[in-house]
Image 1 (cartoon, rainbow, N blue to C red):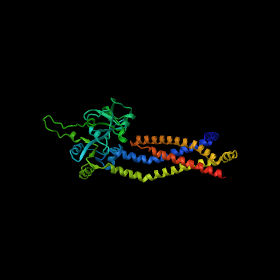
Image 2: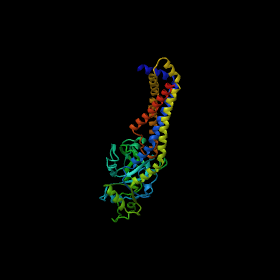
Image 3: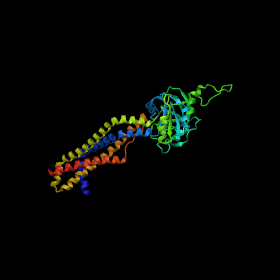
Image 4: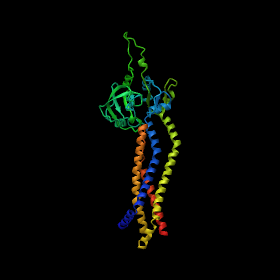
Length: 402
């Protein structure tokens, strides 16, 4: 057997250009197939993962705008709702927890999210806490501290104890006036969603940065003022965790309409987005299917014609007394020596392309795009190897028959 392997290897070295072409074609085929197969499914999983922690949202400006701004941290908030709604929801027996989310400031282009400690106790789909500490601690509701999302900390190069500042607006502007400063007190573990790029600060600090008082005040005579500051205690949205599915529906039905605020199921809005994606998903599937067929056809044909092109060599080996079975085995070994490394190299290149695309999409949208599963990778590689093996067998059979 070792003799056949050595002869196959020497023959391969003698036909270096042909072997290199086969290696490159099989590698490109694998990379193309891997990228096309996972891109559509990766976007879908990223959308689902992002919306999963949000059971109910209360806000203003329409359900689509609210979800895009609050869940995906895109676009501008269309309005605010009174903070009293948070207190009212917390007093409802059907509500397990409610946390405010206030937007409007940024630090170097990363959104500041004004909130309260309650947010860090909310679970994701009934499991463990959605936002979990990796190091440090959660801020105090009355302090000037910040908790960073995992991606924000990494990309900004911040660590515990560093100081950051807020600037009005949602886009980085070097000329923007600096407002409140915060000291980093905690860094979160990845939550696999847009909030990995968020910076969480106390809601009261956001109010203070905009000149809003937290409590009622009294005038010099001891009478309560008609305090404009109190009326301006607002938040952009409220994240609501119902006690159960039935309670969620009851809250949605009973929520008063027409008062500048509305309650929505973010999953319904996400379902519409997925439906839009689904209408174009046939393109991804068609491209993926075509890429798979093209990749398999390339590997098959290259192996087939490479064997047929060496018919004279195989006939000479026959004249020298080499049996048909041994010649066929040598042909298959030569193909495997080239195709398998090509598939492995193509797999690595495809993975790098997927990771690069996932990183770009994450920078633009905050979505975490899945890059596929190992069993499916193995199935793709096995399909291409089988196509090459079949091409080699048929090419060898044709030569031997002649």
